[in-house]
Image (cartoon, rainbow, N blue to C red; front, side, top):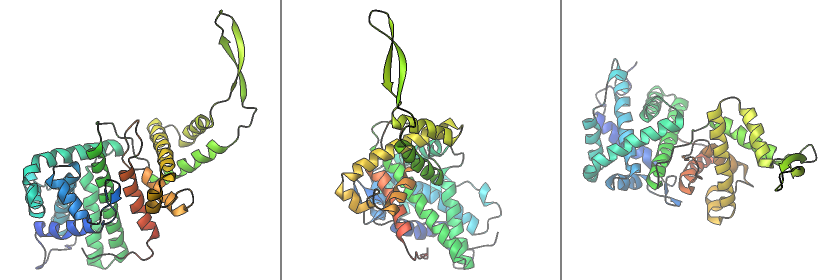
Length: 333
């Protein structure tokens, strides 16, 4: 592979991380949520999280590990994939970027492992979460070095998307009262189709009378016939959607759990003027609707729960910023 940053001016691995990571986080100002509102300073938000030993602070470790691995690729190492970044190297860079996190190193390492495990379960993935970040960093810098603006832009958008997604999952871990099992993510394009189809199916009137005879046992032991209503429209929609999705029961279950949680979120949002001002009204605004549905395909969700406002809103607001951007510009990282 051609050397991308291997020249006399090439930064050291630590310098590379110090240049890349704070700028990348700053790109997400006004997009990462602190409680119910996006924060104006994403670097400060995550620095405070690291200093407090919170799960969100572990995002620094994942970003540093990925950036160090990408640096090996970009500087032309013959077999960068075979190089293992030592924990001490990651700690050293973290303490350079967030010196006051020293007392929380053990807690942050534990949170990083928990976050990796959570993401792996949700994505049914074999590769660690850092791998996707590393690949996006390489694409960004290769595009910048070769003058391929489209490639660089794709890498940068992918990087920002990954950070927003991983941080949302870390935020969910911070706010969960129990260690619930995460619901599998669903491919956003497919989930969008499933959600729209579910809505159509739920609104379709029944083709028959909607009544059926059922045998029942009375109190005195005699069998009698009773007339009941047909199945609930949502139950019928669920049954038909399962058939549409196919034979993969895991995808069926995950899609339906996410659809039901999204319907509950939209209902809450409908009654929330502040949320509508922030995300747009998904019932009236097609762009806001698409942003929310795509976010719900991958946002952190545990079985039996509903979407937390902050975590789903963070991803929806990020999607909205992409869809509403007319001329996105690639920053020099």
